[in-house]
Length: 277
Length: 277
Image (cartoon, rainbow over all chains, first blue to last red; front, side, top):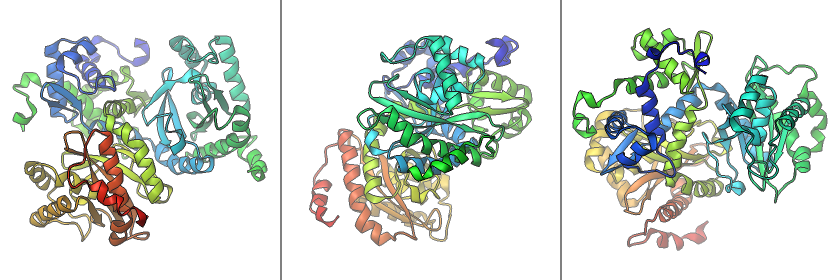
């Protein structure tokens, strides 16, 4: 890993920065208002070290002490805002996500790969699937989701193998594909058909379909997804009714990113099916 | 300021952490793919210092080098996710925001105060005001928005004075209240009536209404807002049609946070007006 990061010597690595993030990320749903002692336990750092980090983060405006307890401030959200602001795709995609959510009456999401996980980078929620409570920045395992399958289908083999190794293709339901050979075959299938549907491999009752978004170089940079529940749809219906909308929307986002469709142009194939809807 | 932060000595402040965030936040819409030299200029740090920070942030997975250019990775979004995850209000508020957006057919937002600015902490976008492109983490000046007025109306006087001083009550349009005495009077008006409407003080054509969200201690912890444009509504119509929905929704979020309405219970007053909608 050291070779991949470009770190050439210990001198190039600033441990305080790592520790600063470790303390910041130790605040979560299980530990929303930790004490200094709880943060020391959670991070494995000494109390004096955690204290100095908290005082620094407080001066920077990211945490606030309230008596013996600490909490994150909304300034923490600004950090993610810099990602969204520096990523033209997210702004470009927003109106397309709204259109897709309106057409399908299901939540529409855009996600990117980060290690063995997929991160939601944009999302338009639709009321009726509020049970699936995901917001921007939420991470889900790549191997068990349609978004992850799409992102991995066009990824270099070494990235796929790293995800297989890191995730161990862990089973979340009896349907999760856990065999590496079957998993690689599933990715080949996604690449051939140009989209992915994954049904109940992450959670019982959860279905989703995803399609690739490409940038001007043709690289798959994100997955566009629509998710629903087994009570409202099934894989066949998703493929018939949602996938064409998904592909068309993904092509439009790709076009906005400067991608020119290669032959055979998928959008033209879809144009012919338009009357279907 | 040093007294407020709890920093007792230089020893307690870890400069590398400040510098790590400075480099991370130097990536933005104007500088999405900076070079090392551009980051050095933007942060005022030396190139060797920026290089070490970038290599550290890369090892932590927050930035990635691509040739001579650098970019943020979606992992940056996880940091904000920890704020949302550690803040029960945001999850609780989500279904209420969706209901409000459906009822009003306008975007619904929840915002918190951070210094002289207001930060969007949750938001349900509605197609037709996509022109106002704000996402979670977006910051707007508190003094010129209905959300800021609500958050300041119930804030301690010293917080109000700090916002007045920091913002200089800068004018964004000819309508912005820039006189401190008029501004304080406007806040008193908001406290008396229980909600705020601000029309075209931040941007021509932009109107919004906001109401306070309270926690179990009765403290105002967020502002719930609905925004529209002067082409679709006006302050009188907002007050008549949107404010009652806004107050009812804010009361419901407050109730979910454990707040018990004091006398006179605003929700009862509203119940009587229900037939209006």
